Image (tube, rainbow, N blue to C red; front, side, top):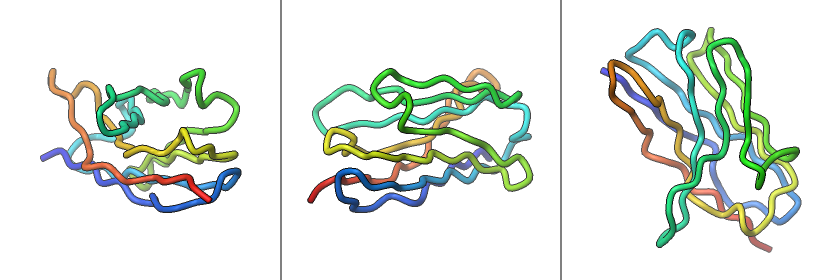
Amino acid sequence: QVQLVESGGGLVQPGGSLRLSCAASGFTFSGYTMMWYRQVPGKQREWVAVIDSGGNTMYADSVKGRFTISRDNAKNTIYLQMNSLKPEDTAVYSCKLPNFGGVAYWGQGTQVTVSS
């Protein structure tokens, strides 16, 4: 079955960097678009970035120029490199397989806290 497992979250000071990973299994990873989202408690989940099977990427305006999404098809993993982090980037970050057989799948999420 499809599994998405995030890692790499933690506590970082403003201006710092983190790299999140999302390891995927249960489907032919290289052929599918993947996404990163984030959510702050009490707020709606926010789309962050997307990468398609060809490696094309798009970003939310709030992270453009600071975050980079990438994929390693040999490792069935997507990454989110986050630089110049701000306190407002604090959230639970989750990866999403938006459409596999008509169903969307989510990972469990990883907490990112940006604070001095």
